Length: 520
Image (cartoon, rainbow, N blue to C red):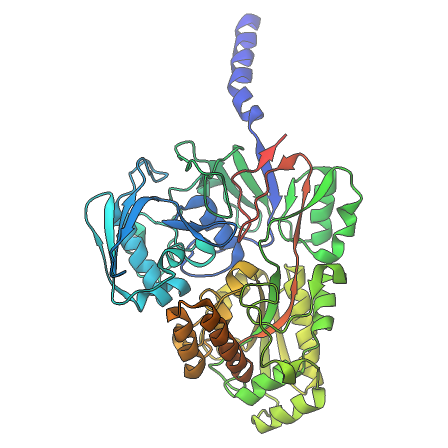
């Protein structure tokens, strides 16, 4: 009996050995994952999910140039109207089925209908058709320079290729399965919303031969699992990093960085290609912010330094910036912002009166679980009171904010007037990719900013190929945006990713990605 027990124990030990040897990177995410369909939200946590689970036709490298990813070869006709693409061999979904052009065509059509960059491209597209299982053709009505750049989707991850069965779901209906062909598999059975998110290495994934660059190149996975441990309290998250309970903090509160800076086992990593920036988004659909004077009042109540100090802490992390396309990006400009560089509470009060505001509740939604957004929200709540507004503050977790901000109902019926968010500089640096500066009314980003004059200038920018003329158009667009105020910038900031020194391989990319990470 004893011998049999010892033999059984030895067998169990051998079976457990591979699990014990697994390399697991444990991360505290900046937010809980609520939405797994990248066509339904631009939430960064969903973007990180998409980057892990799905692959795209093209991806952006560290210079924000489009590079082939799932595409092996492509050609463009002399008239620049017909692209012919051939997929890489061996592409497989996580369920083992091959990726074919049926999946690609359905996914591209869904992106063209739903995703911001896709909608920009859609204006130029005549058709998307499969030639055979590995080749498909994109035919244009007129040439569109950033076609390849756009096929990756915003941040070069929202253009992920779904299985045909998911891609054929109505674009306005969320996909709930997460079966892609990317370097990681989503372990849905271990997903505990509000507590745990797990990704496992996709052993069948074949990386490209190029070195990794941004979100492009060879996505070589060097660990077995990524485990997100949701810890809403920032101080508790920093303590977990100090103790080695977790390996990385994803976009943590900047005012607590000092809790780990002196730990010899912790490094302050940086993964962003450009600084991030925060901002205030008013809702154009409902009074009072359907009136430009009320939006002007919001801009005049802002003192960027107050917001930045509250949200981003020490000045080493942030810089005042009145550029809606970043102050350190390729289209940096502050043209048109002069009237709003200095806070003017009295003038803001007067503009509210002229807008017809009469004490109605202003529904301000904010994320209490994200320190920076919570701070921005609380500063705005105080500023709104200073200019005479009746504030109805609705704080919740970020996932709930993401859900509520998509509602067009009246604020009293579950909608909203104002919310805050932050953007990575890679998407905020150009009129092509900047979400809050598109003013296409019901087709624009949450808040549904509406101004035909600004959109006309943006469309000219999209068609212009001369770089000097592009910059002239950006100046004209920027001036108009400060007149209609679809978005109010609240400084730009640099975000470190504190991590244990046992973790190496953090890539500079449009967003935080997991391939190339190593754990010693």
